[in-house]
Each structure stands twice: as structure tokens, then as C-alpha cells.
Amino acid sequence: MASNDNFFERVYEIARQIPYGRVTSYGAIAKYLGAARSARMVGWALNGSSLKEDVPAHRVVNRKGILTGKHHFQGTNLMQQLLENEGVLVKDNQIIDLDKYFWDPMDELL
Image 1 (spheres, rainbow, N blue to C red):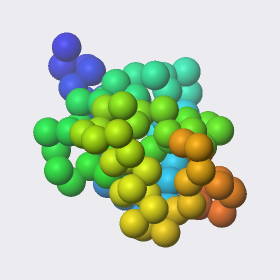
Image 2: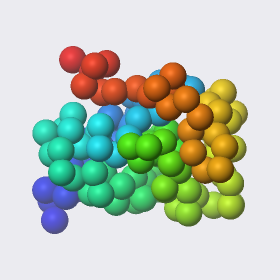
Image 3: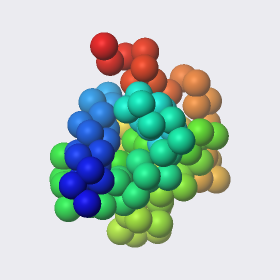
Image 4: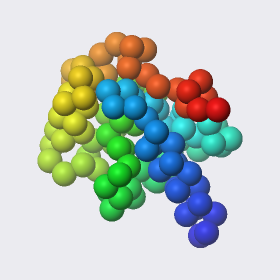
């Protein structure tokens, strides 16, 4: 289980670097970590991040900008509210103009 714990910590490190008002995808984090086919594992990691207050899991969406992780947040619309508080436009559980808000760790982290 140690390898999963290490992977999860690496996911949290990337998530902590997503700037305020920006979003990324599970797949983009997985790709950056050299595990391109592990987007679902990134989701599992972020699902478990609720115990870590400094991990902005609300800034991670699926590749189409859909708030697929929203049911892991307390309250029906908390994920959307957190994003909207940062200026990210959301309609029908999807980021509007995803390209405008998208932060790609492959481009931003060296």
C-alpha cells in the first residue's frame, strides 16, 4: 500500500500548486506524474484528500470540465460554489470556457 500512499501524496503536491481561479483535470495530473492511464487513481486520491485542508480538490475536473467529483464534497453544490467564489464560471455542473481556466501541470511545472 505504500506505493499508493506515495502516489496520492504526489497528487496532493500537484493539486496544491493549481492557482486560485484555475482548474486542471485528473488526466493532466496523471500524465504529469508519468501515469497517463491513471486518471481514475488521481480521482481516488483526491476523494481521500478531504482530511487535508490544504488540497484544493475542487479545482480538479474531468477532461471535459465536468464537476465529476462534486458528490465527494459536503453539500449539493459546494464544489461549484468554491469554483465560482474563485471566479470560475460553471453551468449545469460544467466549466464554461474550460480553455480559459485550464492549468496544465505539463506546461506550468518544470
